[in-house]
Length: 174
Image: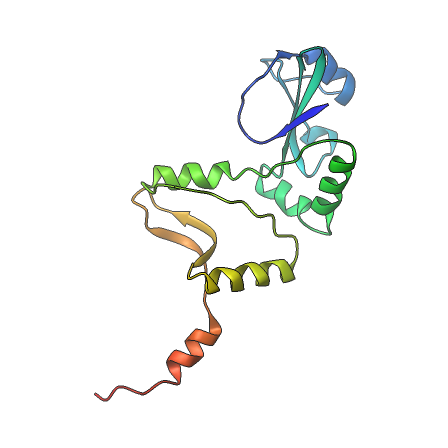
C-alpha cells in the first residue's frame, strides 16, 4: 500500500468515496475525494483520501496540516511513534514543507534547495542550531514574511557564544 502525506490535491487514480465512507464512517466532501476527520475525533490528521491505483488502494493523509493538528502530533512523541509504525507497516513517510516555501516564493524569495528536518526533541533542535551556526547559516524559527520579503514575525536564534565574545571585545571610545 502506498501513502502520500502532504497538501497537494494531486490525484493518482480513481477516487473511492464508497471506501472512504466504509473505512471512516464519514461522508466524503462534495467532490467525493476527501473525508475530513475532525468530526470523527482525530486530533492530528485533517483528512484522508483513498484512490484506486493499478489494482491497489493509495491512501493519502494530511497530518499536522493545521496548527492544532501539528501541536497534537508533535507532542508526547506521537510523531515518532507514527513514523515508526508507518515504516514498520511498509509505508513511506516524507515531510513536506509546502506552505513555508509557497509563502517565501510569494514574498519574492528564490528557494534554491530545501532540506526538511523533523525535529522531535530539544536536543535535536540544539544540535541543529549549533551545526547551522558552525556552517555560517542563520536560523529563524517559524518565520512569517511580508509579500516584499521582509521578516514580519519569527524567532531569530542567536549564537550566545559569539554575542558574549563580541560584547567582551574592546570598547570603542566615543
